[in-house]
Length: 356
Ligand code: PLP
Ligand code: COI
Image (cartoon, rainbow, N blue to C red; front, side, top):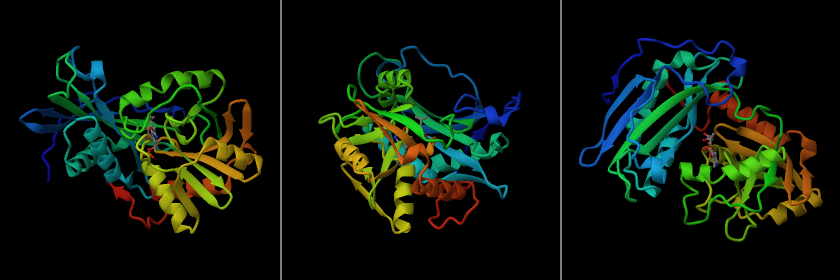
């Protein structure tokens, strides 16, 4: 057992009155988790405290050079009254992989899981009841050493915030419109694309802004070298149903190894479908569209769950996929994944972790 000090809030906040208007990531619960790292001491002093501002030096290194990483997972209120996490060990494994890339000292994954369970249990009344809503969990680490030299920091903060949230896309399961980005790139092999670190998201803002201006919700990134191969979308990995294959770009080092992606591959294969990880060019997608072989496209992510893509724009070509409606593979994946997450179905893969 790990010793985690708990300071309860003396002033609990009112919970959201209307759960249909939660939005995504704007409301925070009563408590947060915090832990420090100091050179010579290692990670220490894990504690749960009331949610609130943190004191920080303006010279803290994360503010200048972006040495930070984060994760995203959810706690679900099960129909049986239980509270569940979905494959949290995978998030903590990826957190340490991001740390490794960003020169942040690794953390004890068992401590991370144990402390998260305690935090979620303490704030369990904040988990929303409304359909498709959950408690979004945001673990993150920032470099706090007060210094302007460029080097790995000697001190860090690990924190976890909890946010009762509705669907990431306001349109829910309705197909989204996506625009294939041709001018900007997000990441290159050898860069930081495989790490969940703020710089990747900062790099995406300009393109996303321009896509919004054209009434598209997100951009689909192409590889940064040949500008030809499909990578991923802002907050999700991509899958295409082409003929008898369900194709997703292989993990090349420049895209995030999504946990929903991994789960979807395992589900598809367990159904006997031909799920393939390989290079997929935008030209191949266009050709499949033109020959009538492109049946479905969908994104996968913790926040986005399964998001069907109804329209994909590449250059001047506007491709309407599956008649702009959700297809059978996407629907089956959505139904199966959410049933496992909310504890409504058997969990044959052992993905659910019960908190309380
Ligand atoms: N790709 C990016 C860039 C993301 O931010 C996310 C979200 O976490 C994903 C993919 C999907 O990953 P996961 O399924 O682990 O949430
Ligand atoms: C997630 O799906 O957890 C994400 O991190 C998406 C986020 C960038 C909003």
